Image (cartoon, rainbow, N blue to C red; front, side):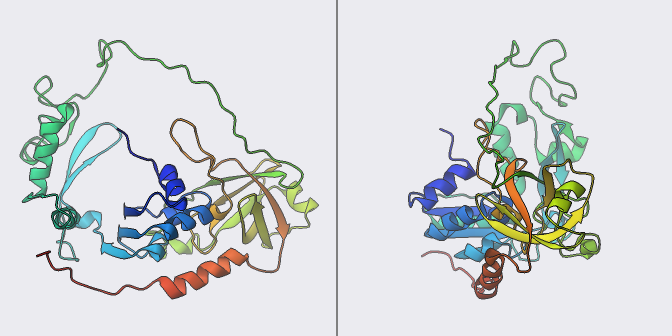
Amino acid sequence: MPGYRIPKILNEAADGRFKAIYIQGEDIAQSDPNTQHVEEALASMDCVIVQDLFLNETANFAHIFLPGTTFLEKDGTFINAERRINRVRPAVQPMTGKDEWLIIQEISNAMGYPMSYGSCAEIMDEIARLTPSFAGVSFAFLDRVGSVQWPCNEAAPMGTPTMHVDKFVRGKGKFVVTEFVPTPERANARFPLLLTTGRILSQYNVGAQTRRPQNNTWCSEHVLDIHPHDAEVRGIAEGDLVSLTSRKGETTLRARISERMQPGVVYTTFHMPETGTNVVTTELADWATDCPEYKVTAVQVALTNRRAEGQAQHDEMVRTRRHVEARTLEPAE
């Protein structure tokens, strides 16, 4: 039976029915919409475990923080968008002293579910035994022939560069009619603009990695792109501090007058936790995938001379919560 997706997990946690979560390599407190709801859910859980490279925004709510490893320290495989299975080999040994899979194995053993893998290669062997399209894959095979594209099994021992050549591999193609369901989010007199969010080239997603090197030379803070007409009727000039308000929350950032945006639409990014862009985005989502509607949030923009209250609260939370007490966990008796 499929488990909960993240939005369902957060809803259940906020209602007191979901008690613990183990988050590996994702910063939901910054990346997911309606930040106040995410923080309420995280604060409601009895046990929040975060495993990551950095003390991110989600780590502010962690009861336990476990170290992650970079791609330079990993041993395993990587599958790209063309179904290609590539070997990943470590350039250096993990600085934390343990591979991430070994940490998970030790936790599992301590909780009473025995795991006894001796290496990543053994984990790949189990995947091959349990996944028909990976049946022919092993570290030794990939080391010998290089990358291959799944399915890679007895019927296709060297992989499958092109699928669906003579027919669909599942038999006849399956087409599903999906009715268009419009978003219930609507602009009105109180929130007359639509906010769409996105990325900038020099920063990646929540910026956990890209904010630390010199990428901040190109993008050190969020700005709000607003059309000249929308700016003029609000008395907003280039570089002014403006409030961005929705039905969910408020944040502040500098305005950038730009004709890249159509009148009635504003745009910003979500890489900087100090801004907290997702404070204003809604948790409305696609009915089939639960993918949030980051592109259509009804908002208002106005001149301001102060930071939003939530931004000050964020600064205080980081100051008081962001610390780690290092401990070595001994194996259970």
